[in-house]
Image (cartoon, rainbow, N blue to C red; front, side, top):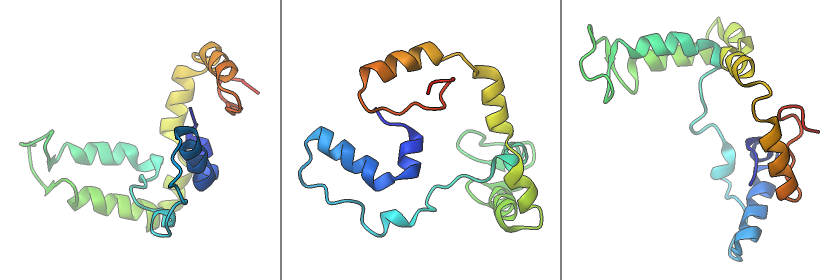
Length: 135
């Protein structure tokens, strides 16, 4: 068991621990291409509402016939809006907004404290500091 935070903090060390646990003696660490990051990085949370609405107007596998197809996913207006949210004039505003985190905290605060304590007790070395008041 490992947390997303441990991967973010030190991806190579966390994956090395996983390889050791699994008995993978061939693991030599991440290659330089994998360590560059940026692949699959999400757009800022602050633009999520805009992007969800754009999805209603783009043709995709899940929405093959929108009312008015202004683009096709992936790409089009969705990608332009995401690009502007990262680099455009409003990027600072979108970067500071955290509606997804706010919703998750409001909805699930304290709900998993007991199970997280039980998990931490079962997995030596697992750092769950910050999860539902643990630590």
